[in-house]
Amino acid sequence: MTPGARLQAAIDILSTIAEMRHPADRVVDGWARASRFAGSKDRAAVSELVYSVLRHRAELAAALGADTPRLLALGAVALIDGAGHAGAMALADGARHAPAALAPDEAAALRAAVLPAADAPASVRLNYPEWLHAEFERAFGGDLEAEMVALMERAPTDLRVNLLKGTREAAMEALAAENVETESCPLSPWGLRLKGRANITGLKAFRDGLVEVQDEGSQLACLVAGAAPGEQVVDLCAGGGGKSLALAALMGNRGQIHACDTDRRRLAKLMPRAQRAGTRNIQTRFIKPHILPGGADADFPDLEGKADSVLVDAPCSGTGAWRRSPDARWRLTPELLESYRVTQAEVLARGARLVRPGGRLVYVTCSLLPSENEDRIAGFLGQCEDFVQLPWQARWPDDLPVPHAPPGLALRLSPVRCGTDGFFVAIMQRKT
Image (tube, rainbow, N blue to C red; front, side, top):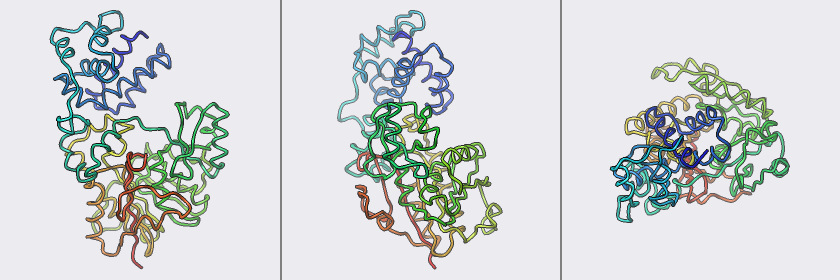
């Protein structure tokens, strides 16, 4: 593909994302599958330009005075990639597969474009919705700028070594034999971080179940949640089952994990993954979204008040994962955020009913917003007086380095403080 054709492909993808409001990774993958003429370097270049626009959309729109996919892509080439106005305009020459020549108003906007200065609003310079500013200030205080800059960077690719299949050292050797260089993650005892890029799902180490893709922050959430051999564990919002698989390894295949979800399609992905991982103590359970207040939970007649641990990996805004999904920041609305908060309260209340006296209720989000984290826990504890919050430090293994997390009972991870995606973990115990 020519540079102009790559630019046009990025414009087409951005247009689809804007019109359909589909996740960017799904649209990019769909384009790649349908564009067999595109080589690996072409796919990488197109993908990089798309994600560059999504990471910098607010400042590009401010610089250009417009937010059309075509101008945003040209602006990213000129201002983010460093090609300059002339370099970007040269790619839109109307040649075959390249963008059409710029209209006079487009050319004028591109020539005049300058990225916002230091006195511009933080939400513009740092590319997040302005209506979230108060929440981020509350979350980060004086660290807001550094954390939001970090959320614009590309996230590393982390792997979790499956201890049911081998050690971290054995996994590093197996990956090196496939020309994939890794290093140990700083905090997770099971974590490996790629030094470059690789097609993980095509590797023998992945197909054999020795490694799974999982951010180090997610691994740490599982580590502090804990699960001992022989326990009865409920993963209430299991999705594709990444955390269930990590907990199964912690349990050494002893005990039982009940992986539950309201989406049959997501849940169906778990058992093939469990088979590949050599996991034998997971069973899946499709559940309905809601239960009647005060009534019996028909989906859990056998587990009410009996679980040693209930993991509530709650649906959330995903603000902690913006490094991986920069388009998610632009899809989030106040109404959608409020719907997440309602669901979070519901699943916390539902999970609490399953915990035995002395058992644990673990609430996890990949959100950085206090309204989805601290506020939800405060609301829950205010209504459920038979639970008490435990300090996460008490659940942390003595032989591991401690995350540089903010003080408090809950564990809060972020890119700047911990080098991970943003996560929140609160551990509550039911009184005996």
